[in-house]
Image (cartoon, one colour):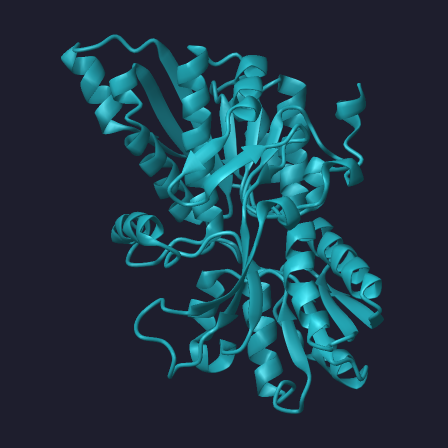
Length: 400
């Protein structure tokens, strides 16, 4: 385990100065991938985002002492499970945030419910977190596979791309994304000609791309993420797949993936995100501060989600005057969400955070005006349409 502890200087200084007595002490655990294929989209950037939320909320000034710890779950459910259990049982962690990789998120989701703590997920994609595996202790903040499938999948089918083939990461997230996108394609009258699943994480995608190429599909849907998606797109370009007329649908692409690919390779890709640094003055101002602390890299929607979820949690701590789990969850669900990155929103009874989503197209090199100027906005998907309806999720605890 790679534990790193950050005790906010502002909180410590306040205690030492004795200018105010901290009434509530909170420990937040940022659990994610710090060394693998999802490190760029979450990793240390999510720790920075959590720290910025504490600072912007002025927790110390409001009598709330916040300690942030972080660890690398290596994208392994057993590692994530062990860390979560140690944090809750021995280290006094109250809230776990981020946790990309759906299989790891499921493990943390289960332990959090068992220990009656709170889990605010930003990094994992499976919509089952608010469906078959929903929990009264979990909030799913940033995006999910249903939203991605309906955003990117619907847009591509509407353009006449009705024959699909999937290259899928063989774990919970990839399987959920393939399932949800298949439902969208078939509901629109399209057809799925086949699918192939690769180990997670993968390195050589050539055999899977050759099968997709031979399928005759108009669209090759990439139900993977992070470094796997980057490598799949790079190798597809080397095979001349898009040049031969087949389209690639990156069903989950982050801005860090586009940065790694370069606009020459990524141009024209259509993708769905819940956040982009260049949406408005507030997102630009926050992202500039973030980049200054993150080696010049702009934030991903996952890191933005960590910031916004921690901010909303701290508001609940302030309003309830403590950290009792049932009171905090009730406060977070009954209070509309509001932050500079996602705007206005809400948390539903099943834990689904609801906000607008956006359909973007990646710019060409000629269209880009500078570093990180990568997206053109095609459409805004209203919050009411962006996520699976509550009644369709099958969340069991709602009926209890």
